[in-house]
Image 1 (cartoon, rainbow, N blue to C red):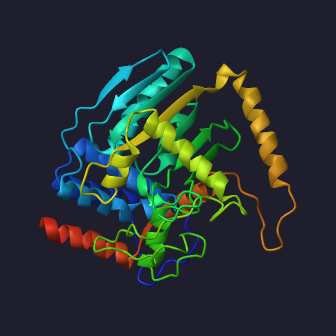
Image 2: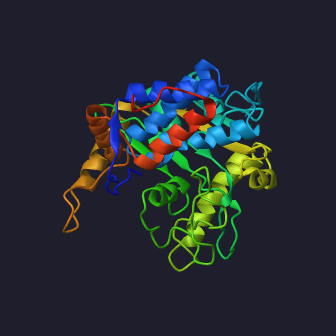
Length: 366
């Protein structure tokens, strides 16, 4: 979701390529190979370009904390086992989730190219960036894309009062051809952890309904990460009256597809949430050929007709447009490519602190 809150005072904008190179250089200094660091930086900058500040440069601290604590394997030996023509499992060997997700989606697309569809589960992984990056990668190649990931220790199941599950994001994409593409990217909680972190970092109040009212008041730790004593709520909120059980069901669905299916334990995931132990995350990546269902042009024409009907719906009094999923992000990309990516003072300080710890003389501001 594109961040709609006004940028805080003191925010500066930076060229996307400069920001990507800067983040990549920090990761290399922290021990990541240059090839892997470039992909991680591309995912982070990709989020910032889309206006998803919660998953951009602000997320660098996630990797740095876990690299420093040794819970990420920089020498991961990722192995893929193909179980059928269209399914298989990639063991990420506790490596960087972004690297594992990229390998898994590439394999899924290779399967789809040969057999019409491909699905890859990823075991023993870590944070894979924002889900839409991977579904969009498949969409740009002409496939329907599916990506999702679990985590742990963040979300309270309906009627529970402690953090158990993750925010468990999912993304589905569909290429529109000459029409608008469809790109859904969402957490299965009312909001992603990063949105709360962004609000706290920028001195804003946390919106009611984002976290459980029975938990502690949300606050950040010394690394700028939301602490684990404020459970997030599933989509629909607390209880069943507003559909919280449906959001919980979606959240658990992602957990099972990414956890039970890959043999990656939820208990390990909960224990590893704070960064001192292996993250133990799982992912589920899929690619499906559009022509497996009929003529591509006909399908995309129907997509266009569907979108047009929706766009012509009567608008709320203060709204001028009904958006299709992916359109707000496309608008943000155009603006941020033109003006530069906004980096808030709090995130800039985080980056400077990392540079200080690693003895990096260059700064983003230079």
